[in-house]
Image 1 (cartoon, helix red, strand yellow):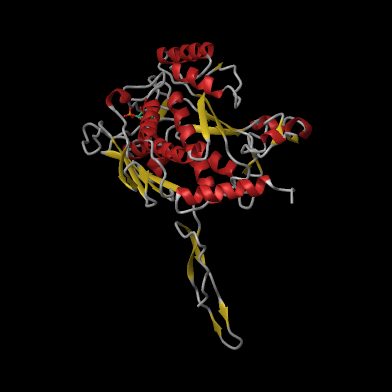
Image 2 (tube, rainbow, N blue to C red):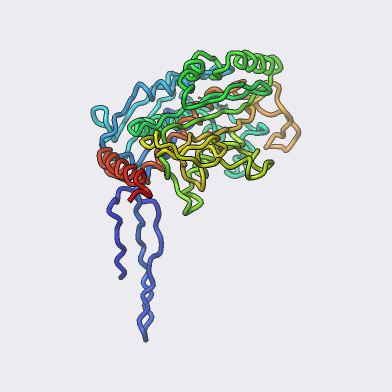
Length: 428
Ligand code: EPS
């Protein structure tokens, strides 16, 4: 049997494989050894239906000793419940996180973390209150899910596909923010556009805190007051027309050291993980990093950010490597380059329309109007909170992978050693 060396940091199993074939000269002994390749990472899963008893998330890989700011997490949950154009559900719920495991006296203890947000509108086992839906809504998971699970009732599909699930994704991401905070990494998310109304402002490391105050004063979560008004007008028109509105959310991450992520594997690239996390949000159809799709229209000289060095910035996470532009959105080769990470996500309009689109009845295949469920006119503001938090989780995951340690103390020491070595690059 082949002995597989176990990496020192054996906190989390991420993959397994067939390890060895032992071949003797005259006799072939095939020995299949299932081994586990062990690597420190951070991951989470969620469970829960929109109208079930609760939503839960299970996180693994959070180091020991991270202070958990429950107020920050609940503030993010409250922000997710808010925004302009929301439906009736948020008047029923008060989303507050409950920790069931992995946290003791306000700090993580290194074990898996279980968190829960109960649903007040809990009626999944009442067939009268959650009646079957036979007429799939175009744009929703209804049709594909009903066929996939071989049913003419879309109810169970829509219960899990619902954006209510993002409640615990926000809680998990906000918990990840508690770790990022320990490394001076901060995230700012907002709504850039709704329909044809777009906020006209730039975000810089110098102005984002002022913009954050304006964002928090905006009902749509857009820091441009003129755009906030235009966005509300657009949503109001859709409401009058019994229609819905989508939009674009944007997120900036400050303080990431150079070299988080990897160029070695497609799924280790931080840009690929961020893109997957963003498009994984209900109703998101597109993601752009930095200059986004415009990179395809311009020559290289107008796209790539020239590199300079400013010794005055040597002790910042950029290590002094400066750029006049940030078209790459802080990511080159799937790794952070010391500039802010910049991400945009496009959300389609909510697919439950007050004036339903054409559909068919799954029982008869006869033409019929799509079904209607209580929903939002626009959930773009909430979506900006979700996007901010799912990205926070991916950045924290990459940080854990780079500076692996069982405890925050060990992780911080690895981080400091790395910054020192990277800062001395070319100097010895
Ligand atoms: C949401 C909860 C849902 C919807 C919305 C967002 O609640 P309910 O279905 O009980 O009204 O308001 O979800 C969707 C738009 C969707 O398509 O699932 C929430 O908590 O964010």
